[in-house]
Length: 251
Ligand code: ADE
Image (cartoon, rainbow, N blue to C red; front, side, top):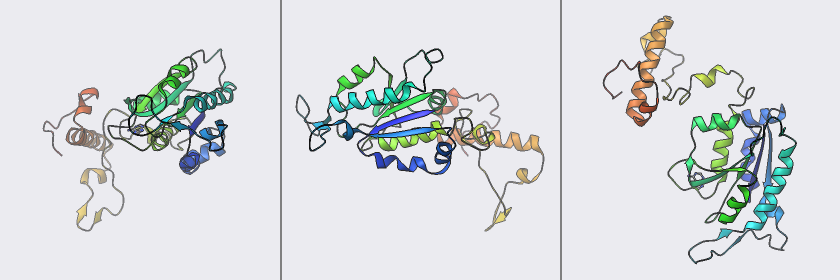
């Protein structure tokens, strides 16, 4: 997969060069380019913002640098998109608290794309005409990490690129670890323990020491359901909760 990110703070994204995603880039599984929006300006101050029409607090990102940056992204991505295989428009994610919610299911959907582009807004946001203009070239998707406000899109992009990147085949060494984790089946993950079996007076649940794989699987499923019911009850409506044998909803 090829990922392009446009930001006025390219260094913000540098942790994406570390750890599993860093290795994936070294191995050629993932190609990541971060573009500095200011490289697409022509004035001495490399201006990317201006005052809002209609008045109000803060500044708005100017349209012209964005169109030039996104043209550069399209040019860079075109080599990765075979028109026979990828007839649809490439995806452009615009992180925004006003977007659709980012979920594991969206991460899976995005992980199937040959290219992804991310446009990091700052200040009060990007001139809306950029999104109209970009809609003819990309499938534009404003996406929110959650119901809170960040200072800009960079932190949201880091979270989304990590969540998507780890789903690309070959990025996570043991693909089984992707199966038994929170949200993979719509539920929260069961609790985990390691040695010693008794620590500061706290014992590992006996069932996990039993060696009985059937009992262990049943216990883990029950724990998933109890935990989901206690912490995120709204998730139970969407999950396959048919096996919930516990009855009550507290841990
Ligand atoms: N930018 C600012 N707040 C955000 C959020 N909650 N999600 C995604 N992008 C954002």
